[in-house]
Amino acid sequence: MLEKRNNIKNKFTFWDSFPQVQKDMIEISHIILTHVNSVPGLLGQALEDTFAVPGKMLRPACVMLFGAFGPDADQKHDELQKIATSIETLHNATLIHDDIIDESSMRHGRPSIQTKYGKHIAVYAGDYLVALSLTLLSENAQSLHSVIADGKTMQNILVGETEQYNNAYNIDISEKEYLDQIKGKTGVLFGLACFIGAYESGTKALKAKKFGEYLGQAFQLRDDILDYTTTSSTFKKPVLLDVKDGIYSGPLIFALQNDDNNHLHELVKMGKDLTQDQLHEIENLVNHLGGVERAQKLADQYTEKALASLKKHWPDNENRALIEQLTGRLLKRQY
Image (cartoon, rainbow, N blue to C red; front, side, top):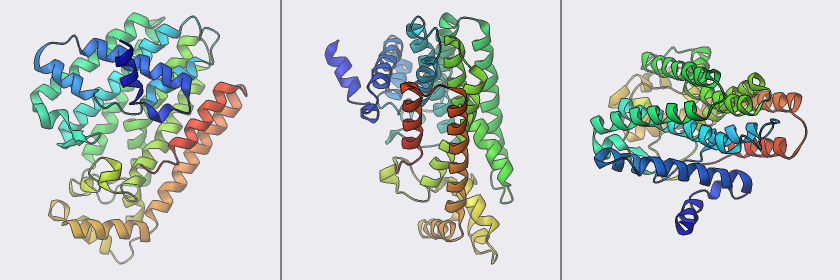
């Protein structure tokens, strides 16, 4: 058992500077593996593969960090870990389903579940994780209020993802439409994680939710910026291929607004016919036309809103300092 825990720890080096958070993430990962390892057959294999290379587990970390503010934090710690596990399983369910819709071949530098096992198994794997998430939450939440918040968040995520799909190849998508999309796609799940941690431990849940939404939007903006400032090997996912599929993120949308000679427009309109050289030209134009700069300014604004809310509503203590450090680290990352 100790060897297994040490192997898990080696996958969470991101949290080396945050030992208590790292300890919680290791335990949450162990809870997940305990559940998925009991699933038989091909579905079980697919679920094990899903968590073989865990992400940074930012959302469950938000549950635990905001849970630590509450007066009931110590008494609720075990339940908070299981609730945080429910958030992580829900997040991974959305990733599996996203890869099916996008026909993505890679996830975390490895073949995606739909690539390795086929779309049928991938659908079932995603659905299984949604069911597991609901089970963990309902068994450990203090009331139906958390379960209701979870359900509403999932509805908002689906609306956000659908709007992104509906806007495929929409070269005239507005800044507001894009920001609404990333709130639904990313912001609301961060918001739920912060809300549910605060609510379950008896502190300012709605204020925590707002912080999480700001953080999630800043995180997604930063994620979209990396498509235009890094390589596939560094980022561990194919970059700029979304442009061929008509999915336009912030930097490109903002650059299109400054494309007075329409050269970028003409390139983007080529869609699936774009060559690798033309994608590289789009990357250069997006940077030259200020798209990355505008996206970074917006990411900074959302970060400032999140930190201002944190400082206004929570005491100046070690836990708040951890959240401030984590926020800064996330939004200055280069990978």
